[in-house]
Amino acid sequence: MNAQELALQAKQASRVLALATTQQKNAALSAMAQAVRTAAKDLFAANKLDLQAAEQAVKEGKMKPSLFARLKLDENKLKAVAAGMEDLMHLPDPVGRTLAYTEMAPGLTLQKVSCPLGVLLVIFEARPDVLPQIAALAVKSGNAVILKGGKEALHTNEAFLKVLTGALNSLPGGWPQGALSLVHSRQDAAELLKQDAYIDLVIPRGSNALVQYVKENTSIPVLGHADGVCHIYIAPSAPAALAIKVCVDAKTQYPAACNAVETLLVDAAWPQENVNALLQALAKAGVKCHALEAQKQRFTGCEYAKEINWHTEYGALELSLLTVSGVQEAAAHINRYGSHHTDAVLTQDEKEADYFLSAVDSAGVYHNASTRFADGYRYGFGAEVGISTAKTHARGPVGLEGLTIYKYRLRGQGQIVGDFVGPNAQAFTHKNLLQEDKK
Image (cartoon, rainbow, N blue to C red; front, side, top):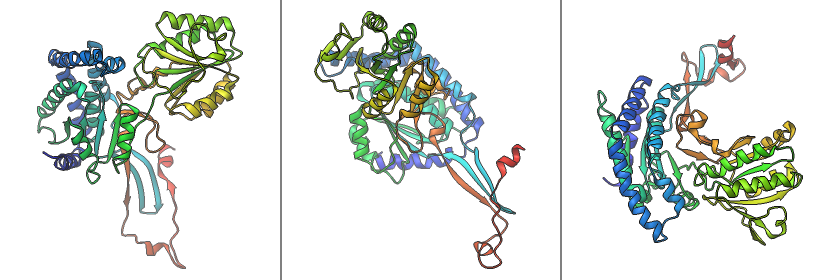
């Protein structure tokens, strides 16, 4: 089946999925979760094949260790995948919600109602748990999805697809053919990017190079983020214990993740003994720190350079450090060099925190919390298809709501526009019926 035929089949499936009931979708999620648990041994065996090939690639310098770390599927990840599917069952159906309800005139009402996007094309690298997460979100949101995984996770992705399609086909009446499909080659992806007649949204999950390639080679709307250059600003009032706890977690809990912190902005007024304690904690955790030569005395024990690329996303146990003077300078630095992903301020000053949360132009802005919380599962979305730094349609972790759009339903009793023009025109009432219902 070529790319056009695959996209057409997905479009046809999406028409059926748009009519699926909440009960049908939840039954599908339950079957998928159970199938994943039952097939654990097969999934781990498939992942082992990918890991063996990846390990050799790392030795040959053809793969970064950070990419290898993302590739591994372990029991915790698999449990999270299954739990995420079941969590989605308990979330409200995102389709069919009345977002606005207006009486345009007596007997003429307008509803704004949520509906599926249609067909998603998701291109991702190395993360084997991405496929089941996105498949589950597509099911709950009533979308068809075509997946293109990285060659590094070829065996794992194929194993997941087999398990999930088997679960869906076992349902009474089955599941629409083409609702969930997987391609492998770059040529397949390139051809799918041309299918704007059938595919409604492209979601690239991976490197900056991948996202840029997708944007430059499709006319289909693209949702995603290019980099994960996340910052933490440590204000003068931040307690040392809090700063150490948050910064170490944000860097070391999963350094390869896009929401791991990459730059610490330390206020000039933060006590030097606190700085020293933080540096010691980071060093103990195996973190390599980079600072400017001019700030050697402030940041002892770091690697120093005359210039630092503040756009750097390390994806490893490395950090850039910089001294700033005040929250305004910190916010300005983040807005200039950050990727508008997730940034945090550590402070006991509420006004300072409010300024940071308002001034920093990022999808997620946090006060006294680790940037690693930027995740659809942690937000209570059940899972996510990715994190968007865009300012259209969806921003931040994109869960069910971000996979829906809306349509307008107008109900009348034979009214025509001519009734509302001319010297004897009928007046529009534009009454908010949702507010009326709440009274």
